[in-house]
Image (tube, rainbow, N blue to C red; front, side, top):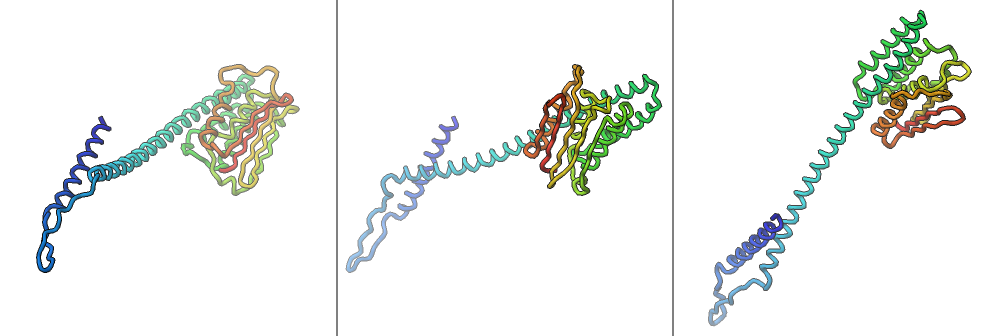
Length: 279
């Protein structure tokens, strides 16, 4: 139907243009030309052969140009809508992933405090206080990004909370970040996953098998590495791998072309490495 009406429109407009030109030419078809000593009438003017076809082709060109312009505008609008929808979907997925991280963290931490309560440790109250500080950071931080300094502070609070349960020396950390990079922003709750996974699934209750944590920067890039010894019997509960899977997906959404994530097992150790080339 569209093609039929488009062709009909071209034919009608071309014919009208041809007739208008014909009328203009022949509105005064005979003109007197003075030729001494007599006056003769000029010959009747006529349009060249194929003029009506030329008029129709010209109208077709105008129509195609108009259609092209309309298609371009429509394409731009659709592209904007698609990008807006993609961004909305990404933000929704990020929120879901973030909400999944928090219960995972709470489950592990409450287990640790439960253990302290079972052995009637004097550290139980301090552990609950430390947990409240961590929850304040999680619940109050609604922004899409936080400063790297805030994220590192949260990481150290989490480590301190774990030390209520595990002995001194079970963690060896080397956090070496200059002042400038600490002011840069990062997505919240990215750094915690490696350490959380190391405590949950690694051997972290002996000083001779410490968890090694390294965080440094070089030329504006962030280098993060956590190494832990793999236990003989890993927990096979339903939370196994949720944290790392969520971290991987968040990195794909937030830092699609500026991150390198490496997870591997080597000589009885689990090694997690993250390189962020731009913050």
